[in-house]
Structures are given as C-alpha cells and as structure tokens.
Amino acid sequence: MIPRDLMHRLSLPAAALVLLALAACGGKEGAAGAAPAGGGMPPPPVGVITVAPQAVALLSELPGRVEPLRVAQVRARVNGVVLKRQFNEGSEVKAGQALFQIDPAPYQAALDSAAAQLARAQASLAQTTATAERYKPLAEAKALSQQDYVNALAAQKGAEADAAAGRAAVQTAKINLGYAQVTAPISGRIGRALVTEGALVSAAEATQLALIQQTSTVYVNFTQSSGEVLRLRKAMAAKQLVRLGGDAVAVRVILEDGSELPRAGKLLFSDLTVDATSGQVTLRAEVPNPDGLLLPGQYVRVRLAQAELPAGILVPQQAVTRGNTGDSVLVVGEGNKPAPRPIKISSGQNGQWVVTDGLKAGDKVIVDGFQKMFVPGAPVNPVPWQPAGSAPAAAAAPASAASARS
Image (tube, rainbow, N blue to C red; front, side, top):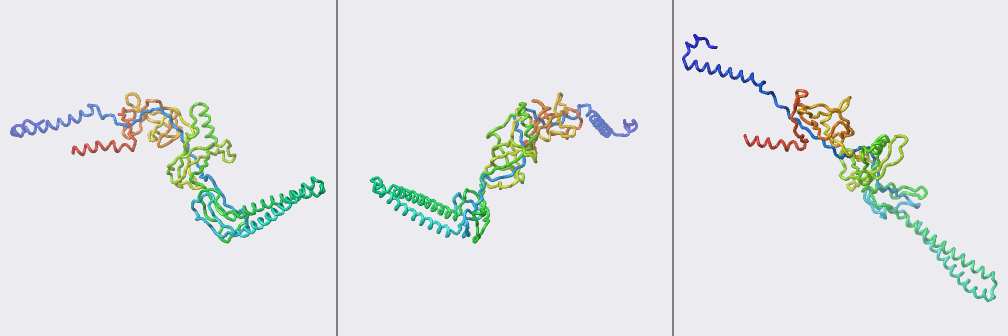
C-alpha cells in the first residue's frame, strides 16, 4: 500500500508506473501460489510388456569334450627299418595314401623263395598226376597191383596239397611285402610322425608310426546330472513339459571364448547308465566342423533344448527383482497403479527369464522407468517397452524434428 502523502508528491505518470509494478508482483505471487492447486505433476511414463504365453524350449548348458569322429593309429605290421616318410605332418591324407616305406628287401626275397617252392610243388603235382593217370587203365586191366595204383593216387594228392601250401606261402609273402609300404587306413588329418627314417620298427610290439583323426565332423560328449534328468522325466510324465525328440533336438556349441559355433549339431543318444563316481549321465552330439574350430580333447559348453514348456512366459531379466525371499515383478494394475507380484522362475535364456507361475495372459509387467516412480503406489503412464536395440531408432525421429524446428 502506497502512503497518501507519497502519492501527492509523485507526478501522475510516476504513480501509474509504481501501481503497475505492484500489480505485476502481486500477479506473480498469486500464480506461484496457485500452481499446486492446478493438479500437480503428470503420471511418469514406464515401459511395459503385455504377457502372452507361448511355447518355450527349455535350454540347458552343459560341459563337454570334443572327440574325433574316427581315429586310426598307424602301426607297423612287419619288422624292418623305416626308409622314408611320405607325407607332410599335420596335413590331410586320403585312405590308402602311402605314409612310410619300410625296407622291402627281406620280404621281396621271401616272396621269391615262396614262388620257387610253389613252382617245385606244381612240377611234382604234374608228375604225380601223370603217373596216376597212366596207372589207372593198368589197374583196371589187372596188369598192375592195386597197391601201386593206390600209392600213385596218394602221391598225386600229396602233390596237390604241396601246391596249395605253396600258393598260400606266396600269398603270405605278398601280404608282408605290401605291409612294408605303410598306407593310411582312413582319410583325415595326420599328426606328427612318431618315428624317423632309420628307425627299427617291430610287428610284435606294433610300433606306432602316426595318428590320423577325422575332424570334419566331430563328436561332443557331455554330461548331465541324474537329478536333472529325473526332474525332466517327472515333468514330462505330468504333462508339464513336452519331449523334444529325434532331429528336433539341436545342439549349439559354445567355445572357450564365449562365442557360438555357427553350425548346429544334433543329439545322437543319451546313455541309460549313471556314472557311479560322479552321478552324471553321458550324452553325445554330432557336430559339423568344416572350419576346424573344434579340436579333439577341447573343452566346450553345449546348449540344447531337451523339453518344451507349452505355455511358457518370457520376461526380460531387468524386470525381475531377485531376493532371498523370492522373485517378483511390478505389474500395472487398476488405475494404472503398479503393484509387486511374486513369481516363480524356471531358467534363463537370451537375456530373459522363463516364468512358470505368478503371471497370466494380459498382465502388464514394468520393464523400464523404475527411477521415475518417486511415490510408491502412485499412478504411472504405461507405454510399450522397446528393447535396447530399437530404442535409438525410436529416439532419432524426435531429435531430427527438434533440429528441423531450430
């Protein structure tokens, strides 16, 4: 309020300016005081997903070891000195390819000797056969004693036996001579040579010369606890899970650096025997390995789905609060008010939890925007949640529009 004596002393324009200034100040104070009475802050936006049950394959990740599809130990089958190696260490070899040459001279000599013995036996056979044929009409005409004819027939049979033994000896000598040239029994990758030129190898000791392994396709042997196998079987018997069988069971191999092998394998069998020492059941998968990323003896992890949940629910892991008392999520209820909901989780896969109990179709689960909810139980504004990969694309349009307006 302006004193009356001051108003008299001020000129009319100056008094008008003072009144306008006071009115403006009063208006600001009134506006500031009236803001809370106008309705307060709007509900904060939160990202939600709408629950929709779907068929979910239950993934298991198990430890395993790589095993070659076929393994052949190249061993000496005759005695002798190694004359030369005929392959490159670490290369791919074909079945029947020459690998080592053992000194063939003794076996060539044995073959020549057996051939000579066979020729002698065949000559004796020809002589005894001719004698028996000459004695036959004489014996029939009683011009020769029966005993002489029987002796001629016996000599012919003995000569036939000697000729057969000679042929067998020649065949054996040929086989031994062939063993002097050591060849690859299977196709695959050969390792280092285990003997050098000049080494004396023995058939009696079966000296190992090299190792060939087929790795273009490999086996992966892995184990699973018998308790987990029992739980799966009980769930399948109760119709809670559906069995995945045959070629439907795809196997993914996780390498030591955490990367996933590009090509999937297939489950071959599950053993019916439990290891008494470890309580584990052995399973085997066949995995294509054309790039050679899997090596025999390598440790890997195997990811496979042995069963399917017919009506499973997947929830992003960031939406779930885990604690000692259990797991829970925030669900948007009546009046858009969030409320905690206890849930049960089966397993996790690809950044999501598989929920088996606590949620139903149509529930709206809060995934993002928790930091905006300052007042517990206050209403929120649910908007569809966008995964991290698609968020930048959604935010690009407002940003570009703002830059266009500026």
